Image 1 (cartoon, rainbow, N blue to C red):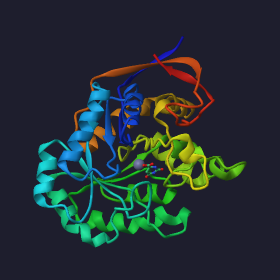
Image 2: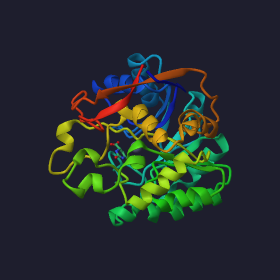
Image 3: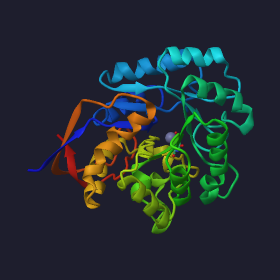
Image 4: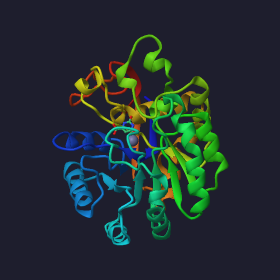
Length: 332
Ligand code: DOR
Ligand code: ZN
């Protein structure tokens, strides 16, 4: 039976939620990943040292082998002493959410320039600036493209700031990341790598494929695939795994988010294998992201085996990506 050994991957974009479910979600991701960048869009948001520390401890008590890399949610009221205490506790990045653009972002930023003083401090202190790059109140398919000028402004105005264009979903975003300096990188999700709008609304409405940024056109997916399989260090893995309970998705006003955590590595291996790009997978999942964040590359490993399994229809009350489908690679 064929097996595949990989460096234990990093996932540079994960949502773990709050309350009882957090432990389940943390353990699911810990089965496949060694380090994860934890998103701060909880309620209330992770914007104080106390909330970040409590959240980190909750993750560690559920999954002691997982290394959570913590983030804070950016708002214009953050002071230099806030940022210094984040730094002292090992927080690696601040996340920018435009107000109202996605799940739990009502408290996001509504005045772009109002955060420039915070961004300037982040640049000096070496925080990564992670951004949900969508312009609210623009037609849904055009939101990401409409935000690109803001990323260009940030990259120019703050030349030492490391910026991560999260979950690139368009050819325009891929092109922008490629054109901008080496301080700008992009994360790629499994769902934007494998699906298009067709999978959301083509034959039927499939709410479990609804996410922000929304799935786009075949040409966009092609550009994302090319970026991932090319081995360009500007692109690395961030799943944006975002669980919502079944009833929050299967309703009249469904939440955005795809629970991909349980199937990430089997799907990544399948896709890289299909493109004859398995040699590019280790850097994509355990190299370029760590380098960009200035973290040591992992020395731990994980093994997969070519043995088919069927993805459960429901995991902790959440319908996961590829529910009911057969995947040919399993974790050993
Ligand atoms: O689909 C999404 N879900 N996109 C995001 O940006 C947030 C996430 C969530 O927290 O549910
Ligand atoms: Zn996200």
